[in-house]
Amino acid sequence: MCANLVAKGNLTSPLVLYNRTSSRAEKLAHALGNCTVAKSAPEAVASADIIFACLTDDSAVLELFRQILEHNVAGKLFVNCSTTQPATSDDLAAMVEKHRAGIVTMPVFGEPSMAEKGMLICVPAGRADLVDRVKPYCTGVIGRGIIDFSNEAHSKASLLKVIGNVFIINMIETVAEGLVLAEKSDLGVDNLHKFIQAIFPGPFALYSQRMISGDYYDREEPVVGIGMARHLADEVLALASASGVKLNAYEAARKHMEMVQAYIGAKGDVSGIYGAVRQESGLPYESK
Image (cartoon, rainbow, N blue to C red):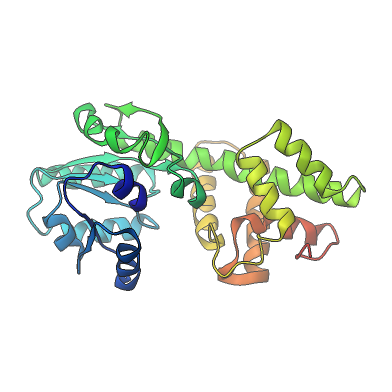
């Protein structure tokens, strides 16, 4: 997202970066150019009009904003791209607004390679006038489209992100199961991959390629860490339980996530569901 904001955001001043691990911010600033690095979150916010925030979970989001809101933020606009629980998004919006600042809740859909290409789907919610200020940085900059929740509650955007995760994880589970069946029935994974590419191009084909290439286990760092995926899965299932809905396919995928983490630990990627399905079917976790 930062790279696309610098390259295509028509910024009038350098992008200010902050990361709790300062070396990451320094490395990114050096790679991108037209960036400065702040030593703290309040320092980053002080010189900015619009502030994008993307953190791992609710507690990290709330902790960061508590630090920021100890300072004068009147007139600033925050864009929270973190995946947070719906209630947290509404609570955060109320906190920010008490300090005479604006906020747009804007989770995004798309894994890291899509973010690099500026192909995310943005889901902005909040006051329409504030959403309008954020839109120029969405389509054509960090994303390829918008699902517009202008004047909707902040929680609605977060709710879509949570429920949208059901589709994404079920897709990964479906591809994994199909590939294992193709291998064990002698169709062959390459032949099934051709079908996936022809009928389901896009994310289905992307995950299929990751699986058959061995990328799902042969990585230094995960694309989507299994710990983060499990955490979100727990939130999805809690929502389903509270709503009186049974997500059988999703629960199967959640079990396979547990198997991935047990086998490969923190380095596990969500696409490792394929390895778990392989193990369950009498094959080695690794495909090669």
